[in-house]
Length: 146
Image 1: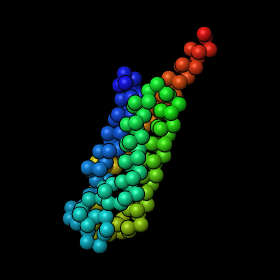
Image 2 (image 1 turned 90 degrees about the vertical axis):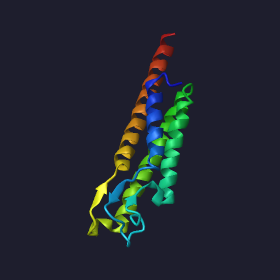
Image 3 (image 1 turned 45 degrees about the horizontal axis):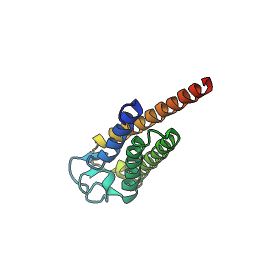
Image 4 (image 1 turned 120 degrees about the vertical axis):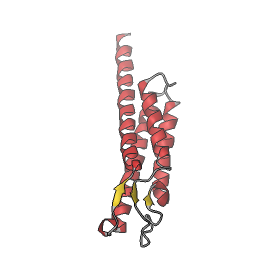
């Protein structure tokens, strides 16, 4: 099951997507009272239900794809849907952040580890898709030789 490189990529991506629930995207030195998202001095996935749903779906699909190693077309579809869910979650994260108007506040906002984890998870999902596609092409070429 974890014998192929795409399974490792799916495992890393799923772990990073689900790890986003524990680390923030952005932090401030002190809580921002007028902000709905930074009132606890951290802006993370847990601050909005839609972000939680998008990243939970992306993580669950990435982890589910590991166990479908015999069905590469379904594995590629799950990787694609996981990528779409992650992109939706990332866009939603940026839109909500900009809507809040925090970039105009006087507080210094530092990027958190969650920002880099989301990008890395997206890259791992795309790499997994690439290697599943590579395996599928290899099997098709071997079928032509028979």
